[in-house]
Image (cartoon, rainbow, N blue to C red; front, side, top):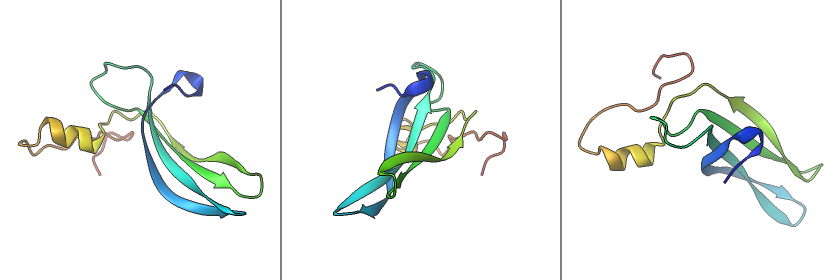
Length: 94
């Protein structure tokens, strides 16, 4: 699936749900990459929250320049190795 700005959606996780009139609407953490086949799974993370007043999603947080792997995929690939996957924008591991 492709998002605007040429970004491909790698994964999406529900963070919370908010009430909007008679329904609950999920809020998401979405991971993106520029293209497939790179040594890492994603390079951007965005949090989309639901604005109940305007009845639409809005970008609440955006972080770029990551070179990181989705943890569940990484654990399946090398479950016997004890390595850290994510490389954060600052270059420091958290």
